[in-house]
Length: 349
Image (cartoon, rainbow, N blue to C red; front, side, top):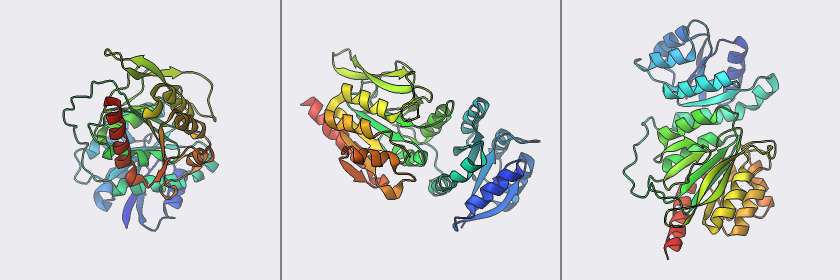
């Protein structure tokens, strides 16, 4: 049984988090703390496996706790609970730089708080089973500076980040394709998410910037608040590749960035040299885009429903008859690598 310490200055939040986590018999709530000073003392005495950590607290805030933990004898996994504000985004980015393992967003209203229970438990389980090793530095990859002739697209929403951890930690450093991820996330929070992914992936990960050229062995995470579109560009050798374009077009399916926008635009540029992966997420985003990829001759992989927190996005692709493979999460990285290898061979024929 894993030991969890809840750290939050709000009595209400401590109670809600405790109630949510007690639904999982594999988790033992060993205590709570209302500020950083109390938290450090309880970490020392109780030695929890994981702490949920609020950022804004009196006497000592969450960022100060992370700084103190750097030199502490006991180092629990740390899940930051961040407020949905621009200041919360900035502090979350700093928390990731200071060593926090992951973050989740705290909804403002009570009904929404109860709805994140499954995602909170899934995230904690993932953190507790993840190896504590630091990010591996990739070896020198000679084709990293080459523009991508193939592209891997990943779309996800609720429940997606822990799944992305698995995929990014298993994709090889020398993948001969560019990778673009659209994860539904509020404005300001994709930068710290990219920074966290960058610690565990074998390829460099960055938040998209307008005009980024897709490169082999590089990962781009769609910036929240704009759609990530893929436009056609030419390499110096005259080969066709892709460039990231940010679009301020209205939200699609109520979200921006939308997976459909990324999928549809990439299908026009890369045609049959697209591998799309759809992970956990609610709503219909990704279905129409998967249909465009199938029409262009590309390949779409769904994660098996048993590994997804929510299956709405995947179900939308099924309804569009646009699915080539359904695989367990653990098998997706190998499948992507195999398909990219075949595409690369075909490009060089």
